[in-house]
Structure formats: C-alpha cells, structure tokens
Length: 614
Image 1 (tube, rainbow, N blue to C red):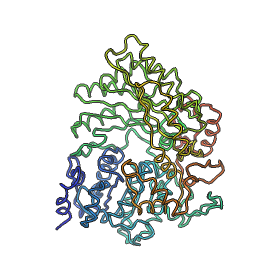
Image 2 (image 1 turned 90 degrees about the vertical axis):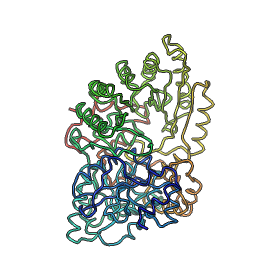
Image 3 (image 1 turned 30 degrees about the horizontal axis):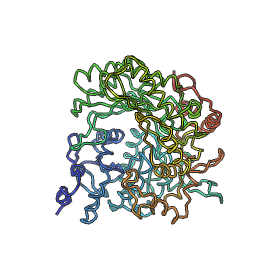
Image 4 (image 1 turned 135 degrees about the vertical axis):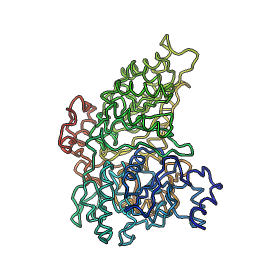
C-alpha cells in the first residue's frame, strides 16, 4: 500500500479530513524530477491556522514562481490524525505530492508565536528527521530552517535548526536555495554549505556561535567560529511597492480561521508603542501605492472567488493615502458585493469620513486598542492616545449607528498600579455613559462595551525588553480587581490565562539553556501549547525542574542595560541604545512623537542608508 492509499484509508476516522489530502484549487504541483531544489514549507500548527497566514502564501508562490524550485505545504496534524500516523507508519508529508517531508532538501518552519515550539519538535519527529541539528547526517540534505518574528530571538530553538532567516524573506530565501543548488552540484557537504550560507546577509547558523555564562546566569561572552559574522543583520525589502505578491492563493476545501483574501498595504509602523515587538522588528515603515493595492485586491478576488478582503498591516489608518486607497477599493468591492475588512484602526486618526467609508463595507462592531486605563500609563507605553480622542472616536461610532465597541487593554505593564487597573473599568463605564448621552444613538439596541485584557509579555527588540513580567499571583490579583471594578452588565471583560503568558515570556526572553527544557517538555507530552485544551503548564514546570532551570529567571527578573542579552548578536536595525533611552523615558512617563512628526533616532535610517520619511 503506497502512502496516498494509507492516508485515504483513515481520512474518515478524523475530524476535518480535508486538512490532510491536498488537491485544493490554487495549489501548485510540480514533478519532483524536473526541479533542482525542493522546499517543504511547514507551519507548526493546524491547517486551519496555517492556511490563514499571509507570509506563507507569499513565500509559497514566490518559490514556485521559479521553474527549478518546488515548494509544498505541510501543517501539524491534529492529535486524532497524529495518533493514526504513528500507529500506521505514516510519516509527515506534504500536501501537494503527498510525499514524505524527509525527502525534501529544505524543511522550513515559519515561527509566528512562542507556544508553537514543541510542535516543531513533534513535526520533525513525525517526519523521521533527527530533532537535534548535531545528529543529522553530514550529507547535504534535510536542511532545517526557520524564519518569522520569533527568530528575532531564536536561542531557545538553536539546537534544533541548521539555519535561521532574519527579517523579510522575499529575496534571501531565493538566494539560499540558489546557493544550495550550486553546492549540491559540486558535491558539497552540509558543513561546507552552512559555512557559505552564513555569509549571506540575514542568515544565522547557530552552531557557529557559542555562549559562556557567569555564575549569576547572565551571558559572559559569545564566541564565533567558521569565519561567521559577529553580528547578523536582518533582511529588508527596500522597494516595497514593487515587491513580489501572489496573483493567486490556495483556496481550502474546509473553513479556516481567516477565510478570505489578504492584501498587505504597508509594512512596519511609525508609532513606537514600547511594548510592541512587531512595531520595531518590521521597521522601516513602507507602504504600497493605492494603485498597487487595488490591482492586487482585484487580481486575488478574481482568481480565488473570495467575497471578503482584509487589509493587512500593523496600522491600516496610518497609510498616508488612506482616503484614496479606500475610495478605489470600495468602488470595486461594493460593485462586486465583496466585504472589505479594515483591522488595525487607531483612535487618534478615526474620523467621520473614515467611518462613512467603513459603513459601506462593514456592519460589525468596531475595535480599538487603548492599551492603558489611565493617561499616565498610556504615556508610559507611548501609546500617544488621549482619553479625549478615545471618547471622540466612540462618539463618532455611536452617532454613526454603532452600539458595540471592543477595547483592547494590557495588564501588568511597567509602572502599573491598581489605579491603572481600576481605570480600565472606569473608562469603559464612561464610554457606556457616553452612549446613553447621545440623543441620536441607535434605537432599540442595547449597547455592549467589550474589554479584552491581555497580560504584558516583555519581548526582545522593544524598550521593555529589560522589564520583568508580573508574577502569576499578581496577575490573577489584578484580574480579580478589574472584574470587581466593573459595575455594569453591559461591560463584558475577558482576559488571558496567566500561565500561558508566563510561558510565552520565558520562551521570548530565553537563551540556549531552554533548548533542553523545550525538548524535555515535548518528550513529556507537551504540544499545541497555544490551545487551552492541550496546554499543560504543570508538565512544563516539571520540565524546568528536571533541567535545573528556573523560569522566574527569564520572566520575572529585570535585565541590566549593560547586560549581554541572548539576542544582542542579531541586528534588527533598531539600536540597543535607543531601547535603553526609550526605557528610561518610559519610567518618566514621557512620550516620544511618532516617526512622521519627528525622527526619534532609532537607528533604522542609518541602517538602510536613507531618511525613513522624506
């Protein structure tokens, strides 16, 4: 029985069998004998999640646009199908050809969130690929690589990967595959290839870097071998308006999380919120022209048949030509009865004109990120949003016919006090009172103010990378305080699990000593850690104990400014000096203007050799 027959035999025994069989409209199938290099693109979560990821769609099409390259998709099987795979000797396979992942030249992972780390190990194990890089063959095969936001600190995964790709992948992925093709023809070994790969800008080969630690656990020094660079600089796309973008997406048979066309309208962020990793690691700010956005939207809708479009960015309303962009898009989408979704709106540039455009394409509630419950805390985090702007935005929404508003906040931020927690409930109450004060508010509808409160997780490459996270007990105390402070049933509060946020902080700020913890946790049964039904924090704690590692060292300790951090040898173009300066400014509750108002000297302009805004 061949592999396809084995797979088909058990499909009706699992939920959502269409996750595992491939053959979707838009998928690209190539003859493996007619290409030079093959790449198995793996997403370490279920098909439903991975198929929604825009970065994977871009790089999948980019690689397959080259005639001599073959890129196929692979997702983590859910527990029901994994059990069948292990019991019936079905290896992890790609969806296009249903061939074992272990037979591909590259096995690439996109690392989008820390709680997917154990899934990487599980997928390598299912594929029959040695989990530790040191145990892999000396031959030039099965190169395990990773990219994505989590590789800005890849050290907790360093023992498992041959290569990390820093920054934006549109150019460097092709360069890496071209190098592999050239060296394979020369009969090169794995080590010879890795030596050459390390010289490509944006490529980090972790086995060429070693760390010594002091008695207090901090890093004493890093040593580099094989002539690898002392610092690895991320890759960026300079001409973003003409960067490759797919003309087609793979359209799934089953419903996925974001089942729609996504069009990236800008990359980077001008705002400088001090907790936000994405806002710094994706700098410099670049945007596509309204014409380019319109062409890509129209092309994808026509080719996929989707009737919904989402504009992807960190802050859509910061596009310098948003009015022209939306006018073009709405003229098209309204005429074709296509729903247009505009996430990532800010309260400080929300206008009646923008609302009128939104109402033409979306009737659901509006979502805004206030982040802090008091003005003092919003200044600490550099949100640069005033309560007056929040209330004005809600007034525009209520007068425009909306009766529900969702507000995002964060709990456990640096310098936070109980007054800031109570301030979240009080701000929500003032918004509710505002609704009832408006004479021309929507009639016959009950208002709903939703408060979603995440736990602050200190992240690398942010001004708050030095900060400790609140303890679990303190977070749970603050969550109870928030609930007790809400006085109306029309204000609905939700918040994150404190244990999940604690593990995320440990993995985000960790070093190589966590590799053994991740491996031990996986061996003890941890996987799908971002799913509440699978999350086993007690097992993780046992793994930390077995490995002699204290999670509090990473999550609850403040780092010194002059300390060598696990990610200091990686250059994301924003300087550590800037982060130190911003951290000090935060503790004085002083704001920094956004990039269009005044350059804050983060270092990106020096790195790219031009001014960010002309």
